[in-house]
Structure formats: structure tokens, C-alpha cells
Image (cartoon, rainbow, N blue to C red; front, top):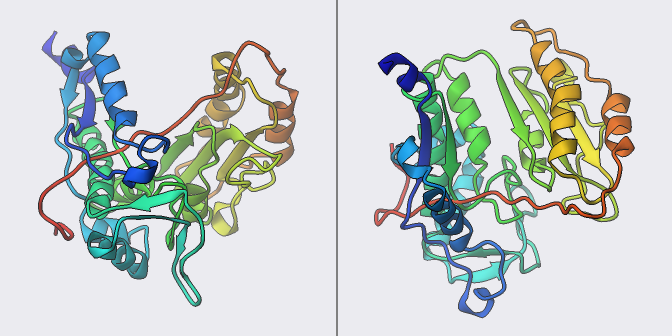
Length: 310
């Protein structure tokens, strides 16, 4: 029926004109490139899934939407990259004594700020489509990624925390939601997302990730459960062994994520996620020799105009 087709509509945000390139000297070896999303898009086409998806037009996040998550200083520093010489750098942090640190993992060019705004705005547009009932769910195929970006820090290839911006938009008076669940299953811990929401009782943050032995970013211990009114609303499942695959992730969803999410009340009383439960469960997983961990977040787009929309 028409109603069932409408309910099952799955949205896709993708901009085939995504820019934001590594410097020429690193273009052949850097892992965060436009091909990271174009390869996924071609795979969707090869699997004949594109015709079954509802396209959602990407847009730039507004300054107000981004400021619901990031500091004004952070956003000003991002905007300044449009006029900066393209380069490889370390992380950027605001505040006293802040600025760019030494390192070569982060890169930027004249299109970085626009690409970051469109990545975040694309996730917001997808979220708005779900809230309006136009789609039942969606996939944001955008870059640069976002979950390492804190309110005042750009790091780990991330400039704006797209998921956090979308979550705050959903919780705004316009979005109308009272609570949001963020599930992060990237191999790296979403340290930026955790930091942004660790004292926000409206958001339950659940992360599964590699942990220990110097694995980036070094955060995400099971003992980190949030603070203040949000104590218990951060749940980390740190895998200390390599080779976790579908079976282990599905088991974590069934044994931990779903019971905790179902217990999340609509009031301010938080569910208590015992850190030892998550830690012991993660450490009990066996180490298969035939599986390998792989995870990366796609990225976003480009527009000729510069500056914030709205």
C-alpha cells in the first residue's frame, strides 16, 4: 500500500561534488579522502539500492545549529580555514593557550569549512526528514567525519560533530524530542560526542570501540558513565582484543544496548549502567583469528558560497 511504502522509505544524503582534499604530498597515502564516500556510493549502486532510497538534499548547517554544540571561537577558527594556506596539522583547541598543535594527521584546504558545514547540515536534514515523517530512517554518506570533534576542539579528521549537531537539533523546540539515543560503533571511541553529552540527561550515548594499548584516541573506558544529572547515560563497551565482528557487535546490542535503551525513562531519572557489566562483557569476547576490525565514517560536500547559512 502507499502508506506502507511511505513508512518504509529510507533516506540518503550524499553530495557527489564533495571536496576537501589532503595536500598533494599526502593525497596518495592519507586515509581521509573523497574516495571514502564515493566508493560506498558506487557499492550502493552496484547492489541496486539507490533506486530504493529517498534522496534528501544536503544543506549547510546554520551557525545557530552549530553553536548549539560548538563554541563561537571554534566556529570562527573553522571559518578562518577558508583563507588559510592548505596544510597538514595536529589538532586545534580553543581557550587560553589554544590553537593548532604539532602533528600531521589533520589537513585543511579552502573547502574544508564548507564541507564540514554541509556534512553536519546533511545529517540535520536527514534527521528533520525522519521527524517530519517523510522517511522512516536514513543514511548520511558525508565527510569529513565528526565524532572526535569536541565543543572547542577539532581533531581526528573531524571539524564539526555532525551527530551532536543533529541530536541537539532534534532536542530543540523545533525538533520536539525529549531524549535521543546515539549509538557509535566506529572502531575508534567517539571522544568528542561523549564529551559533548556527558552531562546532558536528554542524551544516552552508547559506544563500542577498540580500547587500550595506545589505540587512538585512548578514551572510552567502561568506568566513564557520564556525570551530574546524566550519570549512567554514557555507556562504553571497550573491546580490548582485535577481530570483533558482526556476531560480537550483535551480541553487545542484544545484551547491553537494547535493555539499557528500553529502560531509558522519559523523566530525568537516569538508567544506571553498571560500568563493570560493560567492561566484563567486552573483555569476555573471544579473539577470532579470521576476522578483522574495520570502521570509518563517511564524509560530505561542497558549495561555491562561503560563510554560514542563516
